[in-house]
View 1 (tube, rainbow, N blue to C red):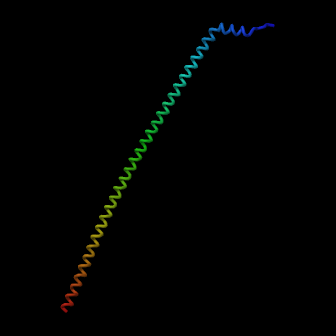
View 2 (tube, rainbow, N blue to C red):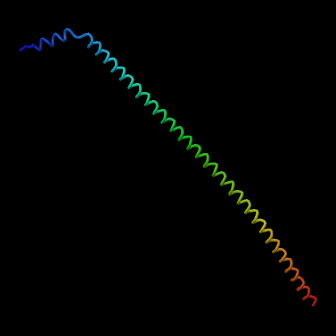
View 3 (tube, rainbow, N blue to C red):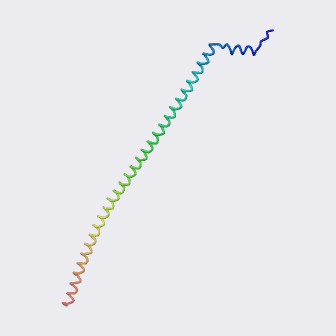
Length: 126
């Protein structure tokens, strides 16, 4: 049976490390650091892209709101103009109707006045 002195074996291993395992370990550490740096860059790039997309969305929303506000103002102005034209037409129609009624009343009054004058004259002659 072989008796192995483990503490002395471990000390020998630490004192005489395998050069390949050190280089492999160092390479692994470099790869890990590179992967971490790449992951940080990707995260930062994704954050920047997300921020840019959010800014673009805010700008687009503000533009759509401004466009909608302009459309609303144009619609109000068009409605006011249409109402103004309709009112003007109605005013002209009412003026025309009033002229016709005044003319009809004037003719009726002249006719009745003429008839009344005739009656008075006929009574006085009479």
